[in-house]
Length: 561
Image (cartoon, rainbow, N blue to C red; front, side, top):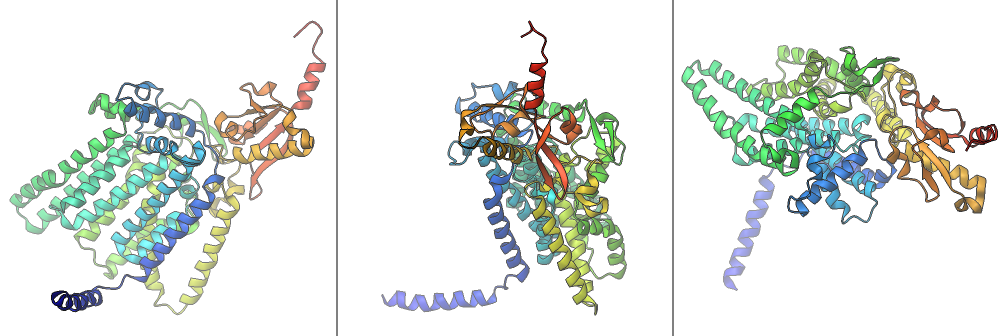
């Protein structure tokens, strides 16, 4: 008892001293935490609002088959042989299939919940990367920018490929930035985390192999920098060898098994099948024209500006403006020397810029087959958020010294509120957003694709059901109705009440649900009874074809069935 009495005051005193010596967590970190809480709360209250997208059905079953592959002790090979979806890893899909065995929610609601959680993790990743590049304020701004990027936020609930891949990519880029000051011998824990992030990205899309190229480039630049500093060939050789066995090789040894864990088809040939997947996607065929600037152009012959234009128009106006001025800002900052461009800072910024520019430039150079706007390049959005946050952080530091700063802060607040109100008006179809430089969604209508995922079909089905309940009243459930949909059947059929019967033949359907993609809403005649619109712009319609079918039956020649 005496010994305990002596120890406790000393321990308490020591803890108090240590606590006082620890630096207080910056206000911007507290604001970032509040932002994450708000994003998570918003996600949890709205994840059921989002519809089933075109690709979700095939990925749902893929996840089930991959899970069964393991539960059957590798005997169930449907995931290996089923369609072309085996060219993807199933890190997200298998997790969703496992969660669906426990979840109290519906099949796709559960997937949307998991997708939303992954999306918030991506926002945290953008914060981490921005904070690593330029400090706590830049981290907060990066998270805010990504959260308010409608093409990220609007897809983070029901895009099972591009959002999880983007999240893996931003976390891998963060750990690339983290290891930079510790090269060529970063801590093993950082190397392992980098390998894990790379493996998870690869476990969704084989495009994660880009990360090994980024890592190799980072190590090369580091070695060249060290060579320029020392002017000794021996240092270059030694640093090169150390970078290989202490960084590149361990990252590969961690990432590859993680990738294989979620990819049964790759397990059949761990080295060759990932390469075959790359070749498959490099020569992917999309035998349909795609809408660009008001014209339908073959996906194999798109103009070079297709991808840059879509990325530019998908970004909020402020983010796009900061991205455009970023090169100029870098030159001005360097000349004024108001920021120390040491080796670590320079390499970090370079690799992030390269991670944005190279994939886009490469896609343009090889004339990649593209469709659905910039969807396949969502993974650059978190990097853009982090990079533009660095520019915004420097701009705010400069603005704080100007007498007009209060007016500028007010203008930014008004712009922010306006942008949030636009996202609110688009909900739950935020991803159809186009910025004000094209006139918003209304200005983009007829020039670019809007609801290509068929996200709006959930609302269309609800509108049709309400219309028929009002028409038939208490007798509604006593009648069966045939309904067809343009494009993905599951996007509509998942929300059907029990007396809605899906038909694959639209011409024989009493009701036809169609989005504006490829003018599908004009494919068949019918009376519009419901329109899904956002900000005055049509996304999809419900057509009543009962009178047309009745007239066709009445005019049928005698003797014919």
